[in-house]
Image 1 (cartoon, helix red, strand yellow):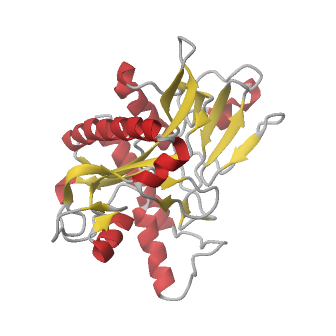
Image 2 (tube, rainbow, N blue to C red; image 1 turned 45 degrees about the vertical axis):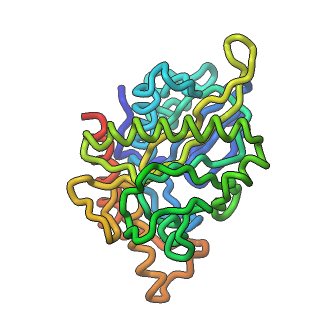
Amino acid sequence: MTADEHTVVCETNLPGLERRQGKVRDVYDLGDEVLLVATDRISAYDVVLPTSIPGKGVMLTRISGFWFDWLGGSVRHHLIEVIEGRAPAGLEDHLDQLRGRTMRCRKTEVVPIECVVRGYLAGSGWKDYQRTGAVCGIDLPRGLRQCQQLPEPIFTPATKATEGHDENIPFERACEVVGDEVMSLLRERSIAIYRRAAEYARSRGIIIADTKFEWGKAAGADGREEYILIDEVLTPDSSRFWPAEEYEAGRDQDSFDKQYVRNYLMGLVESGRWDKTAPGPELPEEIVRNTAARYREALARLMS
């Protein structure tokens, strides 16, 4: 039995387990393992909106599960299984909450740096480039256009914020936080994964403009510490996904991610109907329906 993408799960509650609630996911501590439950909540501008996107959590989990499987033995990661027909022991009565939207994962010591890789000049990177000619201190050629592909992918780390925006920081600052050797290793690995994934996605009609990876420290099979890929990976919530057939440098791009929602909300901001603070506005049915369709299209293309 597979999860119903039309079922809406806004919040989960597993009695007796410690829960940490993020903007989108509910995280449960199982001792040596964690459950990452992707709900159908959606956030924008650091505000969780009152309207959910039916099936969003299931689709995000399927995409992460696909990539973890696709990476295979080449990248060590935390995923043990995606919960489908069988719940962890003691949680059998809660399978309906967990099915299809939950990753059972190894627990790690999370590296407190977001490992962002950019292949195209968009978002905060484009704004930074317009001001300084660089992105996070990395000098780039003059005359680049909005959303233009960069000569080479660049690594632009950010601090992990528990509230509000993550903050882009220079690589040297990230090294001060976790050490030169660790950050150099994670930069190398993050760029390598991005290159491979971007090539595959392009063959499926998706441009991955940028993405963020998270890493955690855990004990390896030989007892020595190792750094493994954690969290969601290469999803429309952690990346910019553009339809390749519509791509054109020099303008904003249509997307398979929640930029569609952000664009709607920005219209409210510009007209004075919302000030980017909680509570956020309800989303119209058309926006909800079209947003879900974009996530579904990304999933279908990747798994075709």
